[in-house]
Image (cartoon, rainbow, N blue to C red; front, top):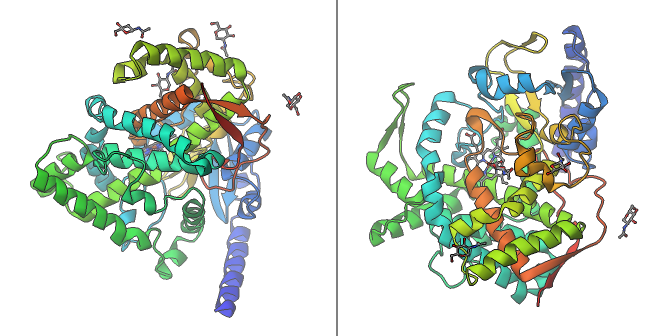
Length: 492
Ligand code: HEM
Ligand SMILES: *[C@@H]1O[C@H](CO)[C@@H](O)[C@H](O)[C@H]1NC(C)=O
Ligand SMILES: *[C@@H]1O[C@H](CO)[C@@H](O)[C@H](O)[C@H]1NC(C)=O
Ligand SMILES: *[C@@H]1O[C@H](CO)[C@@H](O)[C@H](O)[C@H]1NC(C)=O
Ligand SMILES: *[C@@H]1O[C@H](CO)[C@@H](O)[C@H](O)[C@H]1NC(C)=O
């Protein structure tokens, strides 16, 4: 076994070197500034890929784009917001794919987040996005709110949670998605106990495994399929099984909740989904729906937990901001006798400014990747992009560019005050992406994060340890710092 692994590793290195030599001048030949891969730092686990791209971004202040490589594959890092607009929006036809190869036999990978087949993606996106309309969110609010207050209680009852806030945040975000979107345990006395939680959307392990797999599918798609590796294969039975159970329970109870499960039942009744524009048809099965449910967890658990974590971290080191936020939250809680409604949450404007500023300084998704699906041209310098080239939108680099956000390292929620927010340059603030593949959970995530912070700060205050992050965890897209320390202290 060891021998096979060593042999495989050698082959990989040889292939990399050969391909790299072949592509050595790929960007130079096209008149584009080229930086030879520093992805090794990432591979060696020293920092996140977003930080490497930010470093390249910052080192080329006058360029519109910089060419580099991931493994041997040419990647173009975009800096010009006009080009970014074209990639995300106006030339979507050339850039609809993300280029993460998945094994066709892996049912769960056939999800919104990962599919690159245009017609299939379009159909599923149309059918699934109604789950997150404003009306549906209002319906979900009471459950979401209960999750948040249960969470504050959970921290009180579990000394372990106070020591491991990040892990506890994962518990909260997955519990609140499963209760509000799937109706799992929504009735129970404590939403923080829940079968999906045992599954381990664990804060470290699964993320790292996903990470390695994503890196591999990116660099060696053929090898990945040849070895018949499945990105999520081992989770398949569990996730499909849970969804089937929930669907059946709902069928029997005939209760209407207008959540994801109700949407699923409607779709299953239609049997075939159809997109009149493309003519594409898809048979609705439990498996297809389970894959979409799975994408909510993949996309929504770690991201939201990170936003709350970084917000708490910044608050712990900014007593003036923390104090003002406590005041806003206390006033609203007292006025409604501790029973906050959807409207009350909307009134927490300063809280929203704090959250948006956290996502500016620490975008939980620090980069977006697109694969060029047909030859095209980017407008800023008429750059030709060939089919199958990767382009990267370095969110983290952009959102810390002083051109758009003066003193970018400073945590300043005033950037999002009513006077200031309209001055933010379009597309310089894109924590949820932009265009046709913008996050479908944006509003849900905002509500989930706001409610959690409101309840937490009603019950606790935070003491910090003068945090300065040197680098984030080695991660393909994400910015994470699960070891960041701050103390939650119960309020009188
Ligand atoms: C703060 C929390 C979140 C952040 C920062 C975030 C960020 C993003 C970003 C940047 C993208 C686009 C990536 C790209 O264009 O390549 C995305 C896509 C997506 N997000 Fe989120 N997300 C969050 C929470 C959620 C939640 C809670 C859900 C679901 C419940 C969700 C579901 C999705 C899905 C399904 C997609 C793929 C959409 C498509 O390709 O059509 N996200 N998210
Ligand atoms: C206090 O509550 C009342 C209704 O209960 C509402 O009309 C008023 O706007 C609230 N004030 C604040 C500051 O939330
Ligand atoms: C935001 O507006 C305030 C005035 O309301 C101003 O003092 C401050 O400098 C502005 N901050 C930013 C980051 O634009
Ligand atoms: C915060 O960001 C969200 C979406 O990212 C936006 O809808 C909202 O208007 C922003 N709020 C403020 C106060 O900037
Ligand atoms: C935090 O660290 C910075 C830089 O290391 C230092 O200047 C500052 O005095 C420290 N603040 C506290 C409260 O320890």
